[in-house]
View (cartoon, rainbow, N blue to C red):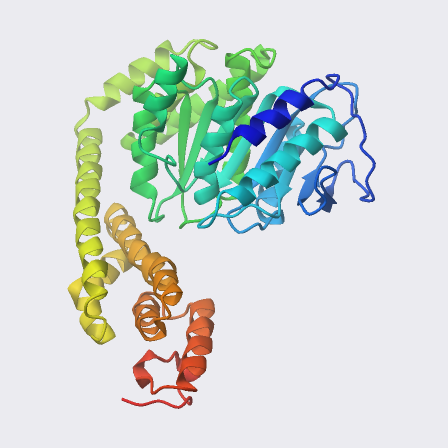
Amino acid sequence: MSLHSLRSIFLAALFLTPGIAHGISSTDTVNVGGVTDTVHAASDPTQTYALFLPSRYNANRRWPLLILMDPRGRALVPLKLFQAAAERYGYIVMSSYQTQSDGPIEPNDNAINAILADAQAKFSVDTHRFYFAGFSGTGRLAWYYAYSIPSNAGGVIEVGAGLPEPGLLLRERIAKDSTAPFAVFLGVGSTDFNYEEVRALDAKLKVFGIRDHLEIFDGTHSWPPESVCTDAITWMQLQAMRDGRLAIDSSWVDSLFGDAARRADKLATVDRYSAFVLYQQLEHDFGGIHDITGVKLAAERFAGSESVKGTVSRLAGFTAGEQSFHQREDSFFSDFAKNSQQRTDKLRAILDLDALRDRAAQTKDTLDAAAAARLLASVFVRASFYEPRRYLAQGDTLTTLRLYGLAQSIHPDDGQLCAERDRLFHAFAQTKPVPGELACKSASKAPASN
């Protein structure tokens, strides 16, 4: 990844006078207090982004900047999720249409450089409070951008992904002889196939002494609901006060802490493990800015309870089970490349997908159901996206169709996948015989041969 251009733009742009919007001319009309769907970057008109300016925005003060990076360039998707919090706390939000994952890094570099240049030239931004938020592959990239401008990055909001490279934290610590100066908010769905990776990163950040917060939401591999996005910005406000980027508002901190502590106390009567996690989070989140003696003692007390120790043990078991499954999964896809002629039911049996489906569907043990759903999600995403890309690049349409069939057996009602299978099946069947089982239901009338 080339980060030189990013830093070069920063060095040039920081000569701008703080607190004054310089107003580079543009044909785009910008809305204050609302969303501007499309803005063309002045430095590169091919770069576009969606923009939100809070209703009280003016050029007489500096405003924190939230940069959103969707892995498919769907700029309005995350912007709508963060808009309410941005209005409440006064954030400028810029969300690129050109960011992407699972491809070259350069388009992301170009997109972020264009946004940073526009932000500092057109608007009054606080150059010490830039926040990078990404989901999946773009969440990983957020680390690179924040580390490239550590004195300007207030935080990273990463959803559904871990580090971009295993040794990043150690390398940066050795290079700078310090921990990351920015805060990290992690979010992940309870059935996200990257769930264990994100939980492992949360633990690793604490070992490295990096301020972080993990929030798990009900859902799959996706941006989180609006409530979690609001929590992320609220938490960043708190961390900005802790590290001196924002003046401390003691009454707000007291209110925030009190509300969370009362939730933990109430939760303790029905779910001791969840209360234990919340007490620990309060200890980590408010240290140095609020008295945490009570929640620290509560966390220590709950850590010794049999119910909490039992849940911790079960979660460790799920982690080990997932690691074992992924080894089998890797072997499966490796062997599949050598023998891809097997029928879908045989392929399902190799990975015991029927048993996983039954576990995921049951409601008695929600922890076990979520763990099974994550394993199914991992197979699905590999069979419906990553592996087919490889085979299509090799011109192997037949193997791709067999993988699509395996993926469809996991999610039979996935209309988007069915449509892609239908398109590929019809195109291939025009020139070569194709087993009928490889067609989606909507493709059943296409020419076929067994």
